[in-house]
Image 1: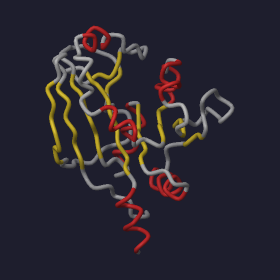
Image 2 (image 1 turned 45 degrees about the vertical axis):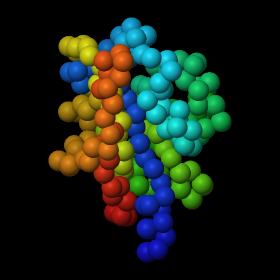
Image 3 (image 1 turned 90 degrees about the vertical axis):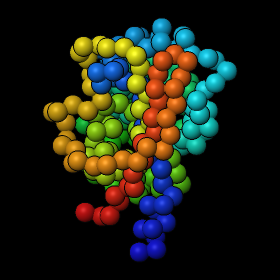
Length: 195
């Protein structure tokens, strides 16, 4: 029991993502270039907490589509951090992949990572985020809403993915960025009891 409390209190699972006003992460083909002009307006002297957040990340877990859409710059940014891809078809033979996760038991994965010394897992990509939220394994969501409508594309939460129960999240902070982006940090306790 004491180990369960230590595990739950010492592991951080978060996402940090930017969406359009109508809830899209990217265009249908994974193209997120629509964010370029918005971020170009950003005050480069203020990172809105990104550096402090990034420095605590031990592991990046991303969905297969996010992995396939990733640029070389992403791998340079996360060099030295554990990279896990949620997929049923990829293997660790794929470039930049340290581990593959099938998405079935997020709680078991988190316990395994914690036992290996991993303290902060950043989850990226709509499918991966939805899997972690649906299993009670997401404790913090930083959602930056950009002042743009896309009309269609890949949503943060898709109806065809695992069902998410109605839950209430606490708002920890909200920043209004120079670019017009509104960044909100939401938090809730992890549900890491074994099933």
